[in-house]
Amino acid sequence: MIDLAVGQSVVLDPTPSGGCIQFPDPAGTSTEHLVVAVATNGVESTNGTSTNYSLTGGEAVAPAPPVVGALSMGGFRKPANAAAFHSYLRQMDRGLALGMGTSVIAAAPPIRRAPPILGSQRTFSVCKSTLCTSFATVTATAKYVGSDAAIYQDNASPSGGYTQNGIDSAGALFENPTYGLHLIDVTAFGSESDLDGNGVVIILLTPAVNKLSGTCSGGVIAGYFLGLDLTSGAGSNQGEVFYSMVPDPSNSTGTCAIPTDFASRLLPVTFIHEFQHMISFNQHVLVGGSGFTEDTWLNEGLSHYAEELGGRQIDDAVCANTSCLGQYASDNFYNAYDYLVNPEATYLIEPGTSTGTLAERGANWLFVRWLVDQFAPDNPLGTTFTRQLVMTAEHGFANVESRTGVPFSTLIPQWQLANYLEGDTTFVQSPATKRFRYDSWDFRRVYTSNPGSFLRPYPLVPQVMSTAINRPGTLRAGSGVHLLVDRAPGDTAANLRLTTGNAAAQARFGVVRVK
Image (cartoon, rainbow, N blue to C red):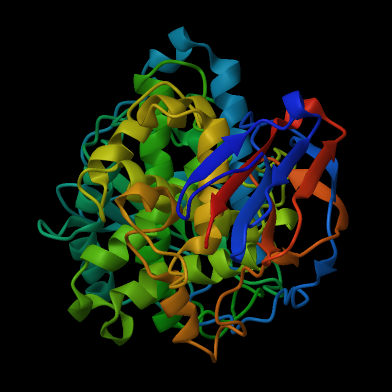
């Protein structure tokens, strides 16, 4: 029997009761409960954990049909093919870590390099395809050398691209002592490695990255980090390297035209994202020595969180259209909208075979953002908490449980309840109901105030159950279905039953009384 006062909540394992929960006679007053049925298994696996389900119980009022892919894409939104490529790289990193062994991981690569000299040249290996099964050798010249970064440009870069002033500006942004990209990520996640002993992170600007996008019909791959470079394996550059595309206004590479201002806007955003991956590989694998990278879902969530940190901290004067939040963080709101339109359709704990959908990236960021709001004493930046998540040998759901002290099977239902109740003015928020909101953003206001980009005032619209429902579907790890159970004066008690086909999915009910 669900007997809650307004604002009270409970997370239930449905197994002991045969999958049933009961809402009592409302006793002369209208009541409303928000119910989520979710899969809480947090183990990342090749094919993902899911289960078929059936919810039975009352007459249903169907919500508005989901509107998928109906967004204005915006000028900075990452394309789906780039997300697929980066998902593949994170799985590749995981395989490297698992296959190396801690004794090999701890050993430095055999090549030790002196700090780069401005104007000097060296060769690099760069992925020839998005599968990185073979590598192209490129020769590049050091165009910028600072205390934390060196920027090399491929000697074969097309004309009409970056000027020396543009490269110097990018280097200065990376190293700015107040709001630099390097400072933001190191403060939030910990330090990178320096396996090659040259004292800097290398940023390689090369048309070899442009070629990874093919015809660019699915968008542009702006850049990447590859864990292979922090090993001594074939194709490794044996040091800390970030790769980025170059401007190609006349499309001399035969892929697509890349205007200089477009490449310039994407370079720092992509870097702050990929640099978190570089730090994470160092902290989990090289320092932690566990043989495990961070799980892809949490690794990507933290990198998207790094973008938000850039938007919050970098001086607007150096950002496109004088809006760093727009330049660095707008993708996250679009991706979150994609997820919230239909959470049931998308994993939070995405499978290893995932193509890295934008909705998955939205879920990853939302969960990390919610965790910081709930457990970081220095919110909204939350860097104390995020450093704890990264500077550890633990990974995935076990890492989250250790940092929060709360079972993952409790966190997931609470997060899903928050995804609907966030900013809902009909639900009285209080210190006791903190888990059911985001402190850092009013998402309802964000989406309502941008009707040209978002077709719904708020994307998540639960199904409403009055007296009868028969809903089948699939619960995917970390996600599930939302229902509003409305009871009017004079109604009798109502039952809701959840049946599932896979106990390993660890299905749970989350329930909060809204009114």
